[in-house]
Image 1 (cartoon, helix red, strand yellow):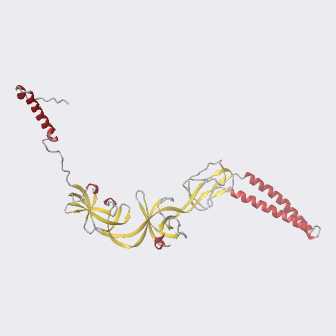
Image 2 (cartoon, one colour):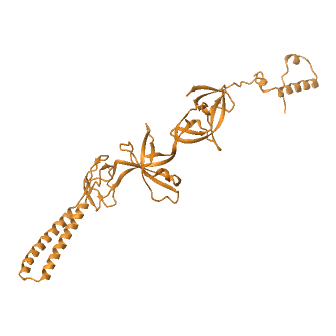
Image 3 (cartoon, rainbow, N blue to C red):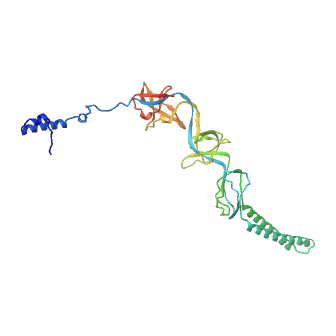
Length: 365
């Protein structure tokens, strides 16, 4: 390996021996290798690191408030009555009266199936029945004067009764070609069009009664005593704005699920609840009397392996504090233990704090 060393002008002016030139070059190379990086870059030996300063945070002064401990469960809104409208016979739809999303009264005709063949059959049966009835009338007069035996008269009467039964059967089939609303409710979207051929498996539309809405939810069997009929629960719905209703427990499933060991509970929502069947709900079942708890935003909690933590501001510095959390409601959570009245809990800027490092309070709630 060869190194090229450029000597200063005064040294180049001197005539040095080969040995002296080698010593000068070696000294310059060693000086370059042992130079500090900052000096080599011209930084003067000092870094450009800057101090970031204290973290900016918002704090909440801990104050106890009345909080009711409760158990939260997921639920689903169901209609008091719900049915899929199917035809009872197969045939072609000749009339369809499905006003989607409209309320219909009980007995309203929803659809009609072609019944021309059944009506023709009924006319034929009625014609045979009239002839049989005339025969019975004549035999009845002859029987009174003993002009005919009892067996012939009884046979004629049985023919009349058979014809009446056939007419009634055909009338029942004709009635099945008309689909009516079994109760007052709101129609869903129609699934067929006029002229379509339908069978008893075809869904024409859905109908649900929205005058009474219920919510079904499940709880572990250990909470059986909390949800007896007549008990009150709180039902929360999302949306903008969120809605909350007080519901009354109506009934419990008679058997506990053997797989999950959960109990299905049905609660009745108040009249006028602005929700739709099938909506998701969060049900809160109170477990006891109201207690005094410190409530903080959920974003102030830092989950941990052994316990949850919050950041407190004490003497201008951040301090980690283990807490035990309780009931959660929307974006707030109750603190069971770990906080004292007057503690300053960091609510915004938690991720920028470090234990023992100074912080700057931007806002206080």
